[in-house]
Length: 184
Image (tube, rainbow, N blue to C red; front, side, top):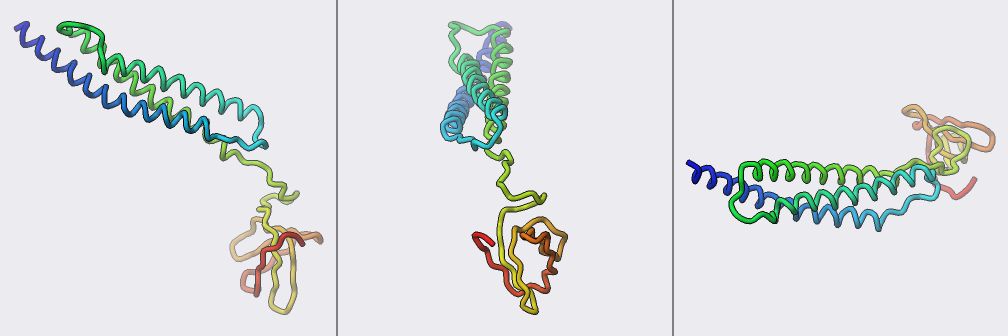
């Protein structure tokens, strides 16, 4: 009976080792991804310093977690024990493999969060009007009237411009031309 249990334990550990070696390759790719993101990241100088510091800490934390996860899985992929495994080794190896894979996912999530600083909203200097897009246009309406200003949010069917004289609203159906301009 002991011989059957030993064969099962040995097969279980071999299966875990094979799985861990596959995950180890994935983890090396994750390490490369985190390193590449760390090298290529270029936060906008308009992003608040605190946000950039948190993003940097998250990136370093992600790198540390990925290294730890790689080490944990490597211990399962290439065990140092010699001889027949006991049932405790198989259970322990399975726990370490789950821990290493879980840490890998946490490292990827932390790096994704750190990279999100690139989408931090910054003021484009679009003026005082809320909703300004920054695009300046010159519009012509039926009857020959023109207006020049910065586009802002408006209800459906309406074009709203912030001009030097105030806010102008024009029904879309009355427009004859819209031309982008560098200044009004």
